[in-house]
Image 1 (cartoon, helix red, strand yellow):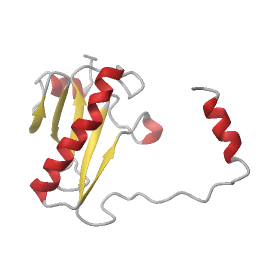
Image 2 (cartoon, rainbow, N blue to C red; image 1 turned 135 degrees about the vertical axis):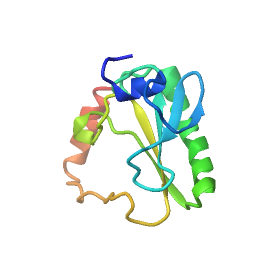
Image 3 (cartoon, rainbow, N blue to C red; image 1 turned 180 degrees about the vertical axis):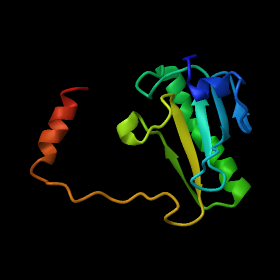
Length: 136
């Protein structure tokens, strides 16, 4: 647990939440600032600032759990689509420095404003790919 981490406080029961699911590694609860009806947050019980710090054995459980919760949310709120979203670091929009997965049911386009990027410069893509591959 990290001092002043609201998600650590929720995980340890010191701040109330409307819980939907919990197991030994995760807690899922309703987002109090939802993007759409049924928006859930899935947090790790232990404190990890971003996905880069989460142990692989725990991270490997996050996506299947997101899938399970998305199926339940779709049925529960009558949505027809969903987003699974993880923001990592302030520049990505992460507001709480504790790993969390958003499960966002979608009932209509535009609820979560995502748009395609600008067309890539195809002459630079191979160099960018090489820079990434060199760091694997």
